[in-house]
Image (cartoon, rainbow, N blue to C red; front, side):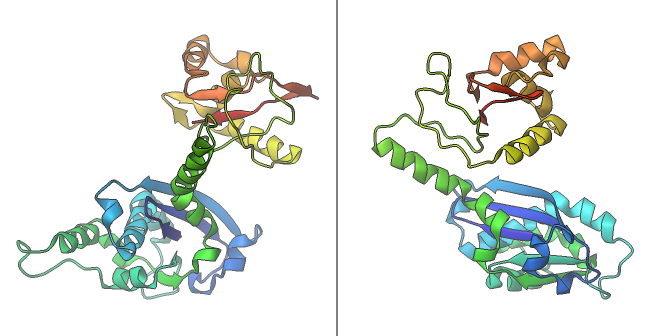
Length: 280
């Protein structure tokens, strides 16, 4: 599990690596698709109070977030491995201070009424992740420049704000999109709801878009109670859109051009439609 923190957010990435000992896993192993698979990611924006924490506190909080999000899965997967045996779990962070603090987290045994706010916070975290004492766990330092996914997620808000401020300074109307799928064609300014905005599309190949479309159509994560695959079908006017129930289709159409935006221009290539879609 890799973690990272910025001034505005914390993020965690969970990997499954086909090696017996987690302490021997390297960055190259994470990049090898034959050995490593990304299981899931978690992200949390820091509130105003949390944004005032020291960097090492935010980095430690990122580890706590990962334990809370993936604790049940990790416990189930490692239940037959004793904590003193071969390490099956590795926590990677670019903060050596946070890693050293993690090894020292424990519940206080004395009087707690007069603990400082920071000590109370650590006490609360120790209580919430006390079960990790029974994990076959090792902590490792991962330089920030190698912590790709968690670093991107934790700094995404800052980078989006910087881009927004840059375009605003130019007097350009801006729409902030965490993801955009390229359509391979120019939009129709007479029909496109995004025509007034300045959009920077991700540089995807047609193969990349095929895979993204496949992933959208296979994703049943609920969005306001509607599976994402059905949202994608309706908003992009995918050929399989008629398969969506009329009730769900009506709900999604009410969101279109409000917080779900899609370029209305598209072209048919074989049996699929390519459209540029963003959720902001």
